[in-house]
Image 1 (cartoon, rainbow, N blue to C red):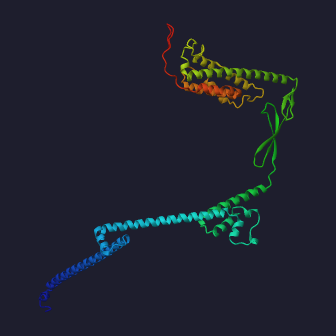
Image 2: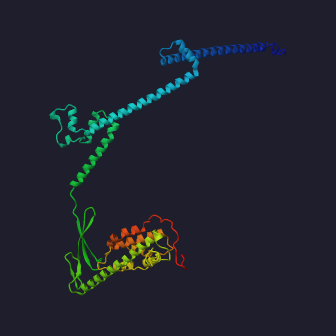
Image 3: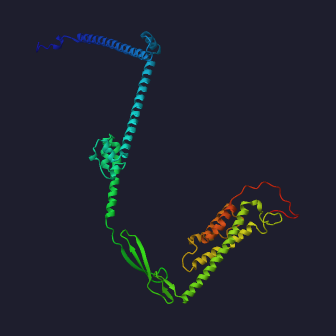
Length: 427
């Protein structure tokens, strides 16, 4: 028909109905196959489930018969069904957990026993002498080690300990740290021995000039190789008139000289100051003792009223009076001045520092009835401590007395107010 003007598509066959039918048919076939697959899958699942349940039932019956050996299969099956699969599975889990715990405990117990056995072997190695260890290994008499070290109850060296520990079957984690410590000790001993064998250096001798003691001197010192300095002696380089050189190299006044007279005068003045300060210190300590008794035993006195009329305290033994005695006492000033003017120029009163004097002097003049009792006692103890340092004999005389006076006794029992003369009153 080419060239005749007729549409060729008019002669084309329409296959779409056949195609649609084929698709519909294919869909039906697919659905059938899917349904078949689902049925087969469900059947398989049911089979496996029943198989698992059967297996679980058999395990349950076996477990029940294990716990109750004389029971029959039917009774065990009835017991299993009465309990149910869920409870049986829970029991199996608990049983498995219990067995796991028991296994862990058994392992821990075995490890503990192994450690105990290993420690015992280690103890034997450390307490066994090399000679005993050699005998235990079957050594002959000729093979035994000799010397005093062979019979000491310990390995002679780190190397010997390693050999004995390995032979005893001790684990490396146990014996290696001990061997390392022994090796460190051996190294230290060897280094110390080498240092001791090393010849010591020769000390150096040096001299220098000084006037630290009031006159020129030449000081000789020894300097060791490690830098330690040691004074060997002093020699006065200039001997003033009226002075003489002592055997030690120092200076001293010549007999009958002006310098000796001045020294004797200073010694006498110092002795007088020393004895004066001692008596002043006793007065102050007595006042502290009496003040302490009034503070800690208020029933003995009343503020502003001291009289023998009622038999409580001596006349004028009021706390204010004792405080005035403490505040005006000159013992500290006497000690300070004598210390500065002492013949030796040092500290004849012991280890008394300037700071201690300043601290004690700052407390004088502060004692009054407005001061809290506890603070007053603490301050008196501090001043008394300095007096003890200046005069050690006072500590033996007053320390126990002050401790007794400053300690608080039992509170006095309540009593009626005393009858006072007409016109008298307490304020």
